[in-house]
Image (cartoon, rainbow, N blue to C red; front, side, top):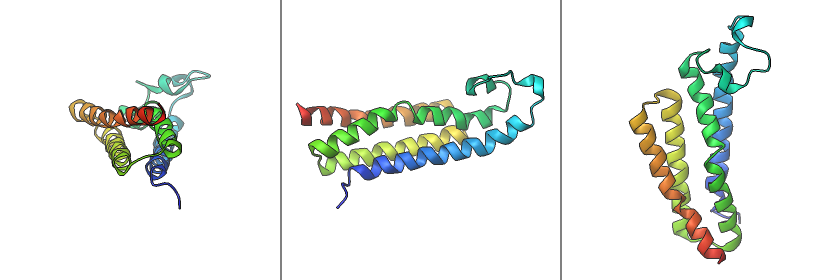
Length: 138
């Protein structure tokens, strides 16, 4: 039987890939509408800030965020999968993933700061899971 602690990590990976698709589906056409002089040769994602609509860039910003803090989550999950975990750990992992998905949807669609910051902070609290993983291996 597969470890239930791995399921939240797999869901967050799938969500990250969905955000990649959403970003590409919105950003690609926007870039295609730019005049040649609006985008310098070798431009990168951040170079599009202020060039294309902010609502389109929000998806890219969120995709970047999903490749930052969740790396701690993935490492934590793998440590717990190998070192042992409890049902509480699984619940904490699902809470983290749920809040990250909510944060993504909010940032990509609405992006109002107070709610976005609250969702980020709440999800970060559930990274206390990393402390639980540390205690398991010490």
